[in-house]
Image 1: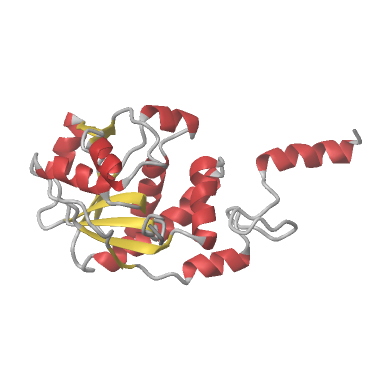
Image 2: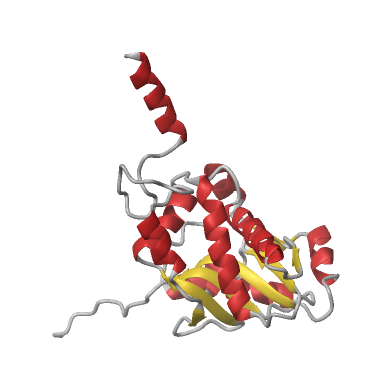
Length: 242
């Protein structure tokens, strides 16, 4: 292999040449995203969202956008495809959604839904911890008073991708346990803080409801849940003719 081609091959291992959002190649990238994709996701505005039906114990929810298109591809690229440099821009987007959901003058307590140990190993780190840290940093840069705590530990669980709403709810009910030290950190949050539970995607709301209910049971009330994306849910297919 010629020396020039060798160095290019090595560079490609470190710096992807395709956009994480649209897959386009030969484009100028910043944090692995082309300008068009960056503009598309930066134009999104956080809005209230709620699964229907919503599970018991689910706080108010806010999402930056629908789980489709470029936003979906960026989340998957970061979460499942090893594009770890997306943590900063996705964390910044999450911060924008948090800022839109909490009054400007109030301090913030950020919590997050953690990965299981198995998922964190597969992803070379807990993806939501990385996003939560980047979101907290961005909010502090904007002048917000922010505390970040990690009182939840995720227990091993089955893949929920193909489960029904009822099956997801049943699995989520025992999905977490509490970490004593970080729980005390959360309890010592500044009085009057808005407690925000972060996740990447809300689908049925079962995971967020289970985590919020567990925290509420030990005196940490989640005021709102904020996610990057919300799935669009469709009625299951049924035959029209009997």
